[in-house]
Image 1 (cartoon, protein in one colour):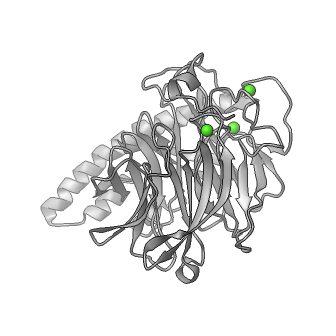
Image 2: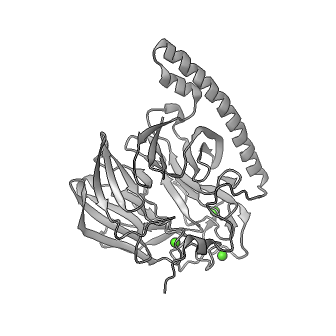
Length: 405
Ligand SMILES: [Ca+2]
Ligand SMILES: [Ca+2]
Ligand SMILES: [Ca+2]
């Protein structure tokens, strides 16, 4: 029998995972100290650049324009409000063949299409979705050939206590409820850690994760268990519409909260939420072969967490990690490939749900470089999003979506 713990029960005996202001003390490896040092320098440099940028903007506005050039001189992203009044938004994406629309997921169980100031309902499964805390409608991905086959995929926690992936077909821009097909349905042992991101990889496979199950410390050690789907990066070949056989692509994830493929290179970036001390970003280049193992629950970040042996795969340590002095729950983002800010192309943008801090970095030779703190924060930072043109968005669970510019 499946027991769904409340958040309070799930965390009993452990520190607050998403506790605001929690400060864990952790010793970092020298390379990470260096990274944090680089981050600090970047913060200071950023602050100076921001001041310089403001002055330039003021000068240019006096001259009657040129604020875009001023922003480039600032060499940082800014945020502008794109949409307000959404209910607990957790995702923004786009659909092939519908380049001017953005699709937004509301955690209680709705998908909305936003175009030209108009919002229309695509899907409403609120009565099937268990919503609250880390539960809800969490993921949405459109089939790469959506323009022709009208198929899209959602991930949610169900009222029957399961982690579910389902497929729907649209007529026009509205999902037809009777077309639903359940592709994954796994009894969830704990209410927290549900992964739920969905994305098509450069290999055409559908990727998702359902977290390590939940609670704290992976009590049943599922993330390293080859017989469990929990704590894994999972793939499904959708070329056969009847196929529901998921494959394990990687081990050792705790609660991957947003992973993305760089649309230009196919490289994979994963934000994996830590236990009580370390938040991490992982990177795997497109050409990587074989199965990766991101270490949980033997490692939290690059630090040993529990005794035991790695089950399968090549151990991957984070390219970037930060401790709970700087946040408490990572929100993985996207590599910027838009047109508005050419100088920022190739920069991976991510942040922290609790502190609202937004960082960006570049990966070079498999290492994080040029780590930068952006000059704004986003409260309740649930997700980042990417539109058809490659422009990025930051989403506040408080109902506001910002465009990064
Ligand atoms: Ca769970
Ligand atoms: Ca464990
Ligand atoms: Ca890890």
